[in-house]
Length: 100
Image (tube, rainbow, N blue to C red; front, side, top):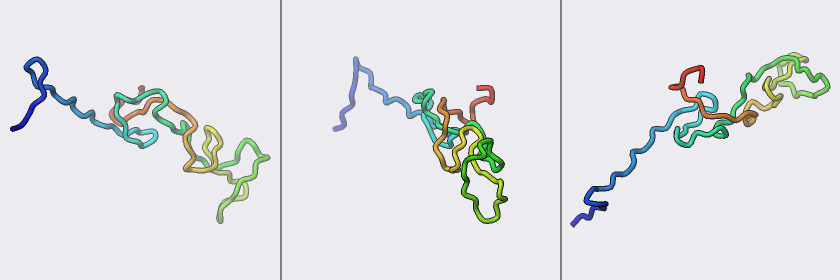
């Protein structure tokens, strides 16, 4: 015999699972209901290869790099392409408009 949970003669329905979205900034999946201003960590600028404004810093160059090349995020100066983002904000999905 199967038992069913009821409340006032009605069966309780389980809430539908929320569809996760993919963030176009940090490429993480997220549930829209848990999206806060601190959810997404990303770099608002590009990883570039050019002279850095701070010429006193030492940069490790790879074979074939010109002697003046510096590789870094233009927004924060982080030299590791895998560095954690320097900015936090809401996740932004591919379904969201560009003006969001």
